[in-house]
Image 1: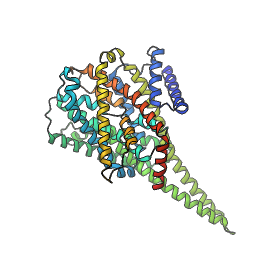
Image 2: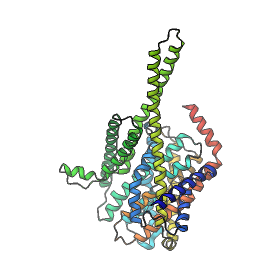
Image 3: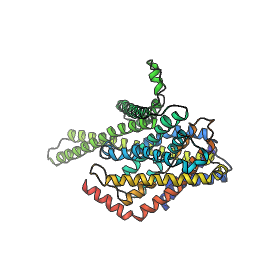
Image 4: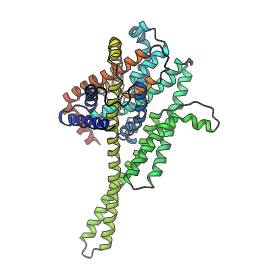
Length: 462
């Protein structure tokens, strides 16, 4: 265990140094260093060893990654960009699956994939990784609206892809009958139910926040809220059955975790802003009192005490956010090390053609969906206009991640194409991590001055 800890810490340190000194995104550094360590140390450390245990590890660490990324979103951003995010995360994913159904015969005709199998396969490779996107964006000055579109789409895209995978793909694969009515009904129930449960858990966390001024305790509440919302959604049927529901309904843990964290973060942010106002008032009062010839020491002491309390509360909230980000960085490091352990190069080489076909196909589909989004945004004032540069960023922000492997492990063990699907999913994750990241770096680096100017203009307009 000590060797494992040393390797994890070393890989993370070097990856962060590469990011700071050479602007190499941490996901690239982490996955490259993880493969190097796995090769040099002959499989040591061994965190998981097989895809099934890797999927369990992803489920363990996924909520903290969602919590960290959700802290980057605000209710104001969701209100302003809600329509755009809905298109990117819901409409675009649904259209992508539809386009996949039309092209699957051409792409994988030799495998005679069923309707359900195609939905399952494409849902897995449409799920994106918000951690990689946030990591790359952190190295550059980008317009806030572009960051919200890319990062928000990555977050909500995962929830949509998982809903399509579980409630449409696996349902049909298990023999369920797909109808427009069923898809509409289950989507409405899952989305609305997950959001409501997440908001409820967020307000429970806020009640708990009022009981403590301890920074560590506050961090624990944030973790409890995120993980609690995630777990409550996944086992929602237990609550229904307790009241005689006799149901097996699952909600979306991803959506619930996101909404719970955003609710918590929204109120915490309002508290910080209120603290800033109180701090300014306290400083002005202190200046006025100090200017008086017969100033009261007791009044000055009272004002100073109030200022100190306000500063402490504000700093506590800021440090809690930093602590969550640190936990997310460590979690991401562990995931990339574990991913290096489960990759079987022989299987990847066996299905190399299929992997490349899927990678090219999903890239083309995503580029088309983002082009359609850019066209729509330029026809209405209710959505943020997307220019050619932004289209490029949004297209290659679709880096795949660990959630795809979790979905892979949910497929029934006896499924005839499980080896093919495993190779394609893992292969596409690897290719997108390296190729998309490099293209993103090139696009942003080439246009960094323009992006900076757009950011400054955006700040002035606000």
